[in-house]
Structures are given as C-alpha cells and as structure tokens.
Image (cartoon, rainbow, N blue to C red; front, side, top):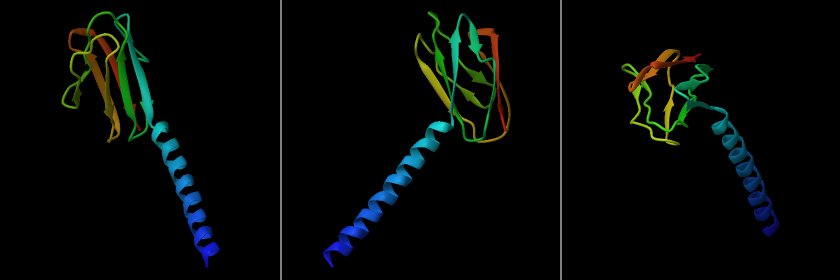
Length: 110
C-alpha cells in the first residue's frame, strides 16, 4: 500500500512539473520590447498577437512618455525606466511621446 501512495505522489509531482514548465514557457512567449534611444522608438512598428505584453524602456538621458490616445498612457519615464501594456484586442495602436510629439510608433495586434 505504501508503494502505491508513493507511486501516486510521484505521478502527481511529474504532472505538476510538466504543467509548470509549459506554463512558464508560454508566459515568456507573449512578451515584446521597444527601446527608446536617440529620440526614436525601436522598432518603430511591431506586430504582435492578442495577449502580448509590450515593454518600452527609455535609454535616453532625458525623459519620455508613451501615449496612445484613449488606450494607454505612461508616466514620464526617466533613463532606464520602463512601461508595459498588455494588448487584449486586435487593431493598430499608434503612439507617441507627449514631450516630443515627433517621436511616433505603432503596435499592430493580430
């Protein structure tokens, strides 16, 4: 009887480990990054799937923002600060820096 209990626990542990590993892989697959450097968003256009989290990181020595009218708005990002947004609906999301409106970008969500 003891070996049956240990065998059951072993199977449960293996199933839990497989589920954890698959879940961890999936969580990281839905991330994308945009860098801010030299007054430019790179990449300027990014295509992602619904559910993807995009993180913008400011590598300039001056502050920037990320604004998509009516969709999302970051706080002012100082050097090496980041802002993340998860895209839950398909569409084209244009955005810009409110401090430097010539800085623009687009996220296409499929």
